[in-house]
Length: 100
Image 1 (spheres, rainbow, N blue to C red):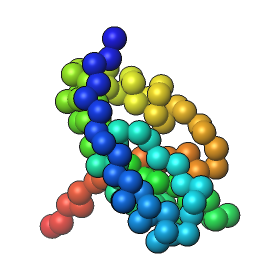
Image 2: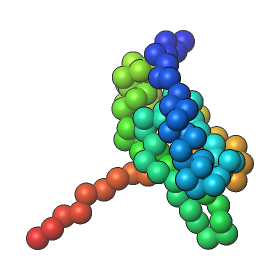
Image 3: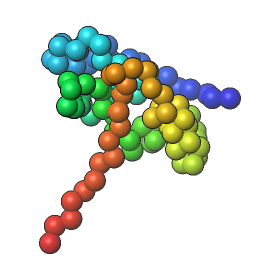
């Protein structure tokens, strides 16, 4: 059983994204507005809200008190595995460039 500490929706931030990109059809994941890094666009005009993968996994571990393995499994099945239409949210795995 999940014991969720719900994060309040950031309605102002959601409204800002929708207005800035003129995309009323953007889809958001409940409880993860603090993990949004932007909006992505692809060929063909598809746009989607983009979430920071590491931030989402961290949120699952902290808010849901999940192990890393459980958080990854939950993400894989319930988040990345959930297609909800053309504007299904996407995830980015940030990398750091090595110089030298």
